Length: 332
Image 1 (cartoon, helix red, strand yellow):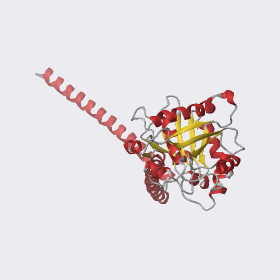
Image 2 (cartoon, helix red, strand yellow):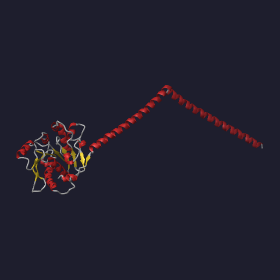
Image 3 (cartoon, one colour):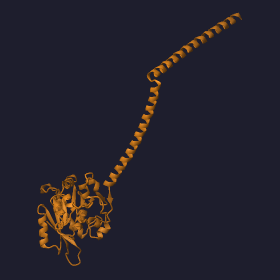
Image 4 (cartoon, helix red, strand yellow):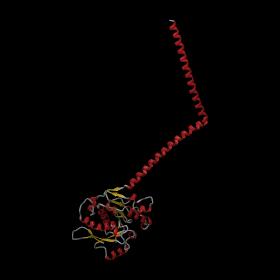
Protein backbone atom coordinates (compact mmCIF):
# COMPACT_ATOMS: atom_id res chain seq x y z
CA UNK A 1 0.00 0.00 0.00
CA UNK A 2 2.72 2.43 0.99
CA UNK A 3 4.58 1.77 -2.14
CA UNK A 4 1.49 2.44 -4.00
CA UNK A 5 0.77 5.60 -2.13
CA UNK A 6 4.27 6.79 -2.66
CA UNK A 7 3.98 6.18 -6.36
CA UNK A 8 0.70 8.04 -6.43
CA UNK A 9 2.28 10.95 -4.68
CA UNK A 10 5.21 10.93 -7.05
CA UNK A 11 2.89 10.65 -10.00
CA UNK A 12 0.90 13.55 -8.65
CA UNK A 13 4.04 15.63 -8.26
CA UNK A 14 5.16 14.74 -11.76
CA UNK A 15 1.79 15.69 -13.13
CA UNK A 16 1.87 19.02 -11.31
CA UNK A 17 5.37 19.67 -12.61
CA UNK A 18 4.27 18.88 -16.17
CA UNK A 19 1.26 21.16 -15.85
CA UNK A 20 3.36 23.97 -14.47
CA UNK A 21 5.86 23.58 -17.29
CA UNK A 22 3.09 23.66 -19.89
CA UNK A 23 1.52 26.70 -18.25
CA UNK A 24 4.83 28.51 -18.13
CA UNK A 25 5.42 27.70 -21.78
CA UNK A 26 1.94 28.83 -22.69
CA UNK A 27 2.33 32.05 -20.71
CA UNK A 28 5.67 32.70 -22.32
CA UNK A 29 4.21 32.08 -25.77
CA UNK A 30 1.29 34.36 -25.01
CA UNK A 31 3.62 37.13 -23.87
CA UNK A 32 5.71 36.79 -27.00
CA UNK A 33 2.60 36.92 -29.19
CA UNK A 34 1.28 39.92 -27.33
CA UNK A 35 4.64 41.59 -27.60
CA UNK A 36 4.74 40.91 -31.32
CA UNK A 37 1.22 42.23 -31.76
CA UNK A 38 2.01 45.26 -29.62
CA UNK A 39 5.16 45.98 -31.63
CA UNK A 40 3.24 45.63 -34.88
CA UNK A 41 0.52 47.95 -33.62
CA UNK A 42 3.09 50.38 -32.33
CA UNK A 43 4.92 50.30 -35.65
CA UNK A 44 1.66 50.90 -37.48
CA UNK A 45 0.75 53.76 -35.20
CA UNK A 46 4.19 55.32 -35.53
CA UNK A 47 4.16 55.08 -39.33
CA UNK A 48 0.57 56.20 -39.80
CA UNK A 49 -0.66 58.65 -37.17
CA UNK A 50 -4.45 58.87 -36.76
CA UNK A 51 -4.88 61.90 -39.00
CA UNK A 52 -2.85 60.38 -41.80
CA UNK A 53 -4.70 57.09 -41.49
CA UNK A 54 -8.04 58.88 -41.89
CA UNK A 55 -6.68 60.77 -44.91
CA UNK A 56 -5.31 57.52 -46.34
CA UNK A 57 -8.73 55.91 -46.01
CA UNK A 58 -10.35 58.93 -47.69
CA UNK A 59 -7.78 58.83 -50.49
CA UNK A 60 -8.31 55.09 -50.92
CA UNK A 61 -12.06 55.61 -51.20
CA UNK A 62 -11.51 58.47 -53.65
CA UNK A 63 -9.17 56.28 -55.70
CA UNK A 64 -11.79 53.54 -55.79
CA UNK A 65 -14.40 56.08 -56.90
CA UNK A 66 -12.07 57.40 -59.59
CA UNK A 67 -11.45 53.88 -60.83
CA UNK A 68 -15.17 53.26 -60.93
CA UNK A 69 -15.61 56.52 -62.84
CA UNK A 70 -12.81 55.59 -65.23
CA UNK A 71 -14.38 52.22 -65.80
CA UNK A 72 -17.70 53.91 -66.47
CA UNK A 73 -16.08 56.32 -68.92
CA UNK A 74 -14.18 53.47 -70.53
CA UNK A 75 -17.42 51.58 -70.87
CA UNK A 76 -19.04 54.61 -72.46
CA UNK A 77 -16.06 55.02 -74.78
CA UNK A 78 -16.33 51.36 -75.80
CA UNK A 79 -20.03 51.78 -76.53
CA UNK A 80 -19.35 54.96 -78.51
CA UNK A 81 -16.51 53.32 -80.44
CA UNK A 82 -18.71 50.34 -81.23
CA UNK A 83 -21.39 52.72 -82.48
CA UNK A 84 -18.88 54.54 -84.69
CA UNK A 85 -17.58 51.24 -86.05
CA UNK A 86 -21.09 50.03 -86.73
CA UNK A 87 -21.86 53.28 -88.55
CA UNK A 88 -18.71 52.87 -90.65
CA UNK A 89 -19.61 49.27 -91.45
CA UNK A 90 -23.13 50.33 -92.35
CA UNK A 91 -21.70 53.04 -94.61
CA UNK A 92 -19.08 50.90 -96.33
CA UNK A 93 -21.27 47.83 -96.71
CA UNK A 94 -24.34 49.45 -98.25
CA UNK A 95 -26.00 47.18 -100.74
CA UNK A 96 -28.87 47.57 -103.18
CA UNK A 97 -30.97 44.93 -104.86
CA UNK A 98 -31.29 45.53 -108.59
CA UNK A 99 -34.47 44.21 -110.17
CA UNK A 100 -32.96 42.17 -113.00
CA UNK A 101 -36.32 41.21 -114.49
CA UNK A 102 -37.23 44.89 -114.76
CA UNK A 103 -33.90 45.68 -116.43
CA UNK A 104 -34.37 42.82 -118.87
CA UNK A 105 -37.71 44.30 -119.89
CA UNK A 106 -35.93 47.63 -120.48
CA UNK A 107 -33.48 45.91 -122.82
CA UNK A 108 -30.52 45.86 -120.42
CA UNK A 109 -28.00 43.01 -120.33
CA UNK A 110 -28.43 40.86 -117.23
CA UNK A 111 -26.46 37.81 -116.07
CA UNK A 112 -29.56 35.70 -115.53
CA UNK A 113 -31.34 36.05 -118.87
CA UNK A 114 -28.94 34.15 -121.07
CA UNK A 115 -27.83 34.94 -124.58
CA UNK A 116 -29.66 37.88 -126.14
CA UNK A 117 -28.94 40.04 -129.15
CA UNK A 118 -27.96 43.05 -127.08
CA UNK A 119 -25.77 40.86 -124.84
CA UNK A 120 -23.88 39.70 -127.91
CA UNK A 121 -23.47 43.29 -129.11
CA UNK A 122 -21.88 44.35 -125.84
CA UNK A 123 -19.64 41.30 -125.82
CA UNK A 124 -18.17 42.69 -129.04
CA UNK A 125 -18.01 46.20 -127.62
CA UNK A 126 -16.22 45.31 -124.38
CA UNK A 127 -13.50 43.09 -125.82
CA UNK A 128 -11.17 45.78 -127.29
CA UNK A 129 -11.80 47.97 -124.23
CA UNK A 130 -10.63 45.20 -121.93
CA UNK A 131 -7.62 44.56 -124.14
CA UNK A 132 -6.63 48.23 -123.99
CA UNK A 133 -7.14 48.31 -120.24
CA UNK A 134 -5.06 45.29 -119.25
CA UNK A 135 -2.56 44.74 -122.06
CA UNK A 136 0.66 46.36 -120.88
CA UNK A 137 2.04 46.60 -124.41
CA UNK A 138 -0.62 49.12 -125.48
CA UNK A 139 1.04 51.86 -123.43
CA UNK A 140 -2.32 53.42 -122.50
CA UNK A 141 -2.16 55.27 -119.21
CA UNK A 142 -5.07 54.53 -116.88
CA UNK A 143 -6.62 52.35 -119.55
CA UNK A 144 -9.07 50.93 -117.01
CA UNK A 145 -10.73 54.37 -116.67
CA UNK A 146 -13.40 54.52 -119.38
CA UNK A 147 -15.70 57.47 -119.96
CA UNK A 148 -19.03 56.97 -121.77
CA UNK A 149 -20.39 60.18 -123.23
CA UNK A 150 -22.38 61.59 -126.17
CA UNK A 151 -22.66 64.81 -128.14
CA UNK A 152 -26.15 65.70 -126.93
CA UNK A 153 -28.68 64.45 -124.38
CA UNK A 154 -30.92 61.51 -125.18
CA UNK A 155 -28.51 59.56 -127.38
CA UNK A 156 -28.39 56.62 -124.96
CA UNK A 157 -25.06 57.05 -123.15
CA UNK A 158 -26.43 55.99 -119.73
CA UNK A 159 -28.14 52.99 -121.32
CA UNK A 160 -24.81 52.01 -122.92
CA UNK A 161 -22.91 52.66 -119.67
CA UNK A 162 -25.13 50.28 -117.72
CA UNK A 163 -25.08 47.63 -120.44
CA UNK A 164 -21.31 47.77 -120.70
CA UNK A 165 -20.96 47.54 -116.92
CA UNK A 166 -23.33 44.57 -116.79
CA UNK A 167 -21.46 42.81 -119.57
CA UNK A 168 -18.05 43.32 -117.91
CA UNK A 169 -19.49 42.13 -114.57
CA UNK A 170 -20.08 38.77 -116.27
CA UNK A 171 -16.33 38.38 -116.93
CA UNK A 172 -14.46 35.77 -114.89
CA UNK A 173 -11.32 37.81 -114.24
CA UNK A 174 -12.51 41.39 -113.93
CA UNK A 175 -14.74 43.55 -111.79
CA UNK A 176 -16.48 46.79 -112.72
CA UNK A 177 -17.22 50.03 -110.91
CA UNK A 178 -19.94 52.19 -112.46
CA UNK A 179 -19.60 55.88 -111.55
CA UNK A 180 -22.45 58.28 -112.19
CA UNK A 181 -20.48 61.35 -113.27
CA UNK A 182 -23.44 63.12 -114.87
CA UNK A 183 -23.63 65.31 -111.80
CA UNK A 184 -26.16 67.77 -113.24
CA UNK A 185 -28.69 65.24 -114.58
CA UNK A 186 -27.92 61.74 -113.24
CA UNK A 187 -29.77 59.01 -115.14
CA UNK A 188 -28.39 55.84 -113.59
CA UNK A 189 -30.59 56.01 -110.44
CA UNK A 190 -33.70 56.19 -112.62
CA UNK A 191 -32.73 53.24 -114.81
CA UNK A 192 -31.58 51.06 -111.92
CA UNK A 193 -34.39 52.30 -109.67
CA UNK A 194 -32.14 53.33 -106.79
CA UNK A 195 -32.15 56.26 -104.37
CA UNK A 196 -30.59 59.33 -106.08
CA UNK A 197 -29.89 61.08 -102.76
CA UNK A 198 -26.99 58.86 -101.73
CA UNK A 199 -23.58 60.38 -101.06
CA UNK A 200 -21.30 59.92 -104.02
CA UNK A 201 -18.64 61.40 -106.29
CA UNK A 202 -19.04 65.09 -105.47
CA UNK A 203 -19.21 64.36 -101.74
CA UNK A 204 -15.84 62.60 -101.61
CA UNK A 205 -14.29 65.49 -103.57
CA UNK A 206 -15.65 68.02 -101.07
CA UNK A 207 -15.24 66.12 -97.81
CA UNK A 208 -11.72 65.06 -96.83
CA UNK A 209 -13.15 62.73 -94.20
CA UNK A 210 -14.90 60.65 -96.84
CA UNK A 211 -13.02 57.96 -98.73
CA UNK A 212 -13.94 56.14 -101.93
CA UNK A 213 -14.80 53.09 -99.82
CA UNK A 214 -17.36 55.15 -97.88
CA UNK A 215 -19.54 55.74 -100.95
CA UNK A 216 -19.23 52.39 -102.72
CA UNK A 217 -22.61 50.75 -103.22
CA UNK A 218 -22.56 46.98 -103.53
CA UNK A 219 -25.21 45.26 -105.61
CA UNK A 220 -26.73 41.81 -105.88
CA UNK A 221 -24.52 41.37 -108.96
CA UNK A 222 -21.32 40.07 -107.42
CA UNK A 223 -18.79 41.95 -109.57
CA UNK A 224 -20.70 45.22 -110.00
CA UNK A 225 -20.26 48.18 -107.65
CA UNK A 226 -21.72 51.67 -108.05
CA UNK A 227 -20.83 55.21 -107.01
CA UNK A 228 -23.65 57.73 -107.33
CA UNK A 229 -23.23 61.35 -108.48
CA UNK A 230 -23.67 62.65 -104.95
CA UNK A 231 -24.95 65.97 -103.67
CA UNK A 232 -25.43 68.55 -106.39
CA UNK A 233 -23.07 71.54 -106.33
CA UNK A 234 -23.07 74.81 -108.31
CA UNK A 235 -19.33 74.50 -108.97
CA UNK A 236 -19.33 70.90 -110.20
CA UNK A 237 -17.00 71.70 -113.12
CA UNK A 238 -14.37 73.14 -110.81
CA UNK A 239 -14.73 70.15 -108.49
CA UNK A 240 -14.17 67.68 -111.32
CA UNK A 241 -11.11 69.67 -112.41
CA UNK A 242 -9.67 69.86 -108.88
CA UNK A 243 -6.60 68.13 -107.50
CA UNK A 244 -8.87 66.13 -105.21
CA UNK A 245 -10.63 64.66 -108.23
CA UNK A 246 -7.26 63.87 -109.81
CA UNK A 247 -6.21 62.04 -106.64
CA UNK A 248 -9.46 60.07 -106.63
CA UNK A 249 -8.98 59.02 -110.26
CA UNK A 250 -5.42 57.94 -109.54
CA UNK A 251 -6.65 55.87 -106.61
CA UNK A 252 -9.38 54.26 -108.70
CA UNK A 253 -6.95 53.45 -111.50
CA UNK A 254 -4.16 52.02 -109.34
CA UNK A 255 -5.87 50.65 -106.26
CA UNK A 256 -8.28 48.43 -108.17
CA UNK A 257 -6.06 47.07 -110.92
CA UNK A 258 -8.43 44.24 -111.84
CA UNK A 259 -11.35 46.63 -112.09
CA UNK A 260 -12.77 48.57 -115.01
CA UNK A 261 -14.11 51.95 -113.89
CA UNK A 262 -16.89 53.28 -116.15
CA UNK A 263 -17.86 56.95 -115.89
CA UNK A 264 -21.27 57.90 -117.22
CA UNK A 265 -20.46 61.53 -118.02
CA UNK A 266 -22.58 64.48 -119.18
CA UNK A 267 -22.95 65.20 -122.94
CA UNK A 268 -19.90 66.87 -124.43
CA UNK A 269 -21.65 69.78 -126.15
CA UNK A 270 -24.01 70.71 -123.33
CA UNK A 271 -21.71 70.99 -120.31
CA UNK A 272 -18.07 71.62 -119.55
CA UNK A 273 -17.83 68.81 -116.97
CA UNK A 274 -17.43 66.14 -119.67
CA UNK A 275 -14.48 67.91 -121.30
CA UNK A 276 -12.74 68.26 -117.92
CA UNK A 277 -13.33 64.61 -117.13
CA UNK A 278 -12.23 63.46 -120.58
CA UNK A 279 -8.76 64.91 -120.09
CA UNK A 280 -8.16 62.46 -117.24
CA UNK A 281 -9.51 59.28 -118.84
CA UNK A 282 -7.61 56.38 -120.41
CA UNK A 283 -10.36 55.55 -122.94
CA UNK A 284 -13.47 57.32 -124.20
CA UNK A 285 -16.57 55.81 -125.76
CA UNK A 286 -18.72 58.27 -127.69
CA UNK A 287 -22.34 57.20 -128.20
CA UNK A 288 -23.84 58.39 -131.48
CA UNK A 289 -27.58 58.11 -132.04
CA UNK A 290 -28.51 56.71 -135.44
CA UNK A 291 -30.47 59.00 -137.79
CA UNK A 292 -30.30 61.89 -135.35
CA UNK A 293 -26.74 63.00 -134.63
CA UNK A 294 -25.50 65.07 -137.55
CA UNK A 295 -22.07 64.84 -139.07
CA UNK A 296 -21.26 68.38 -137.90
CA UNK A 297 -22.36 67.63 -134.33
CA UNK A 298 -20.23 64.52 -134.23
CA UNK A 299 -17.24 66.38 -135.63
CA UNK A 300 -17.53 69.07 -132.95
CA UNK A 301 -17.87 66.47 -130.19
CA UNK A 302 -14.74 64.66 -131.38
CA UNK A 303 -12.87 67.94 -131.38
CA UNK A 304 -13.69 68.35 -127.68
CA UNK A 305 -11.93 65.10 -126.79
CA UNK A 306 -9.07 65.10 -129.29
CA UNK A 307 -6.54 65.13 -126.44
CA UNK A 308 -7.50 61.56 -125.57
CA UNK A 309 -5.55 58.94 -127.53
CA UNK A 310 -8.23 56.22 -127.47
CA UNK A 311 -11.71 57.23 -128.68
CA UNK A 312 -14.32 54.66 -129.66
CA UNK A 313 -17.79 55.09 -131.15
CA UNK A 314 -21.02 53.23 -130.51
CA UNK A 315 -23.62 53.70 -133.22
CA UNK A 316 -26.74 53.37 -131.12
CA UNK A 317 -30.43 52.82 -131.90
CA UNK A 318 -29.77 51.54 -135.42
CA UNK A 319 -32.26 49.08 -136.93
CA UNK A 320 -30.83 46.11 -138.84
CA UNK A 321 -34.16 45.30 -140.44
CA UNK A 322 -37.82 46.29 -139.98
CA UNK A 323 -39.24 45.21 -136.63
CA UNK A 324 -35.85 44.60 -135.03
CA UNK A 325 -35.03 46.07 -131.66
CA UNK A 326 -32.49 48.77 -130.98
CA UNK A 327 -28.86 47.79 -130.78
CA UNK A 328 -25.46 49.33 -131.39
CA UNK A 329 -22.51 48.84 -133.71
CA UNK A 330 -19.02 49.45 -132.44
CA UNK A 331 -16.27 51.35 -134.23
CA UNK A 332 -12.80 52.21 -133.01
